Image 1: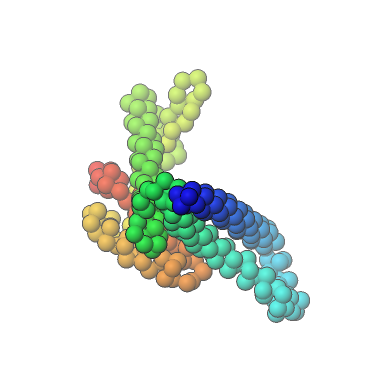
Image 2: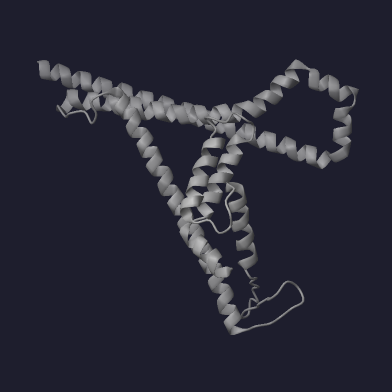
Length: 264
């Protein structure tokens, strides 16, 4: 009798947990959609301002523009379009954390009642720690995949350039070589200039010399990442700068460090 009651309670708890998971997924989806929509509208408005140019700026600088900008509803609307995407993204991240921690804990309780299996972790907080570790591992894997993809793309570009240099060398009057192939006459340009520019811009962003080794780059990256981390830096461009710092660090990998040194 007792066992049947435990199994029944386990099934009820499992069903409740599934409902909680679905509700949180719906909430996360709604917030994600809203953030995307707000970002799209904001980008469209910025593009509209760009198209309006001096005329729109003149209107906003005039009495009508000043009165409009002082309107509390206008101020609240502007704040919404600026603040909501930032808070919405963070809230989604927090909801994913809560969903994993709560549902994993409750499913473990349900399995214990139904099948007598032991819980994965001793305390509720350990589920949260597990989620954070899993997220860190996922981000590292995505970073490695991006680096590998980027490495392959640059290798392919340099390979194509070298092949066409070897097969047919033709000088033109515009920035070096220009090669044409087969019937489709596809043009390939020297990727060296673009590579050097991107490499040096990445070094400048991390504030390291162009001859810096991977240890100096890693140290500089950690400093910059901490400086612009959205959880620490509350400025409007913190998220954008944090992403730029990450992109620069991904580009300054071992392969690209060696490639830059060989070019120079």
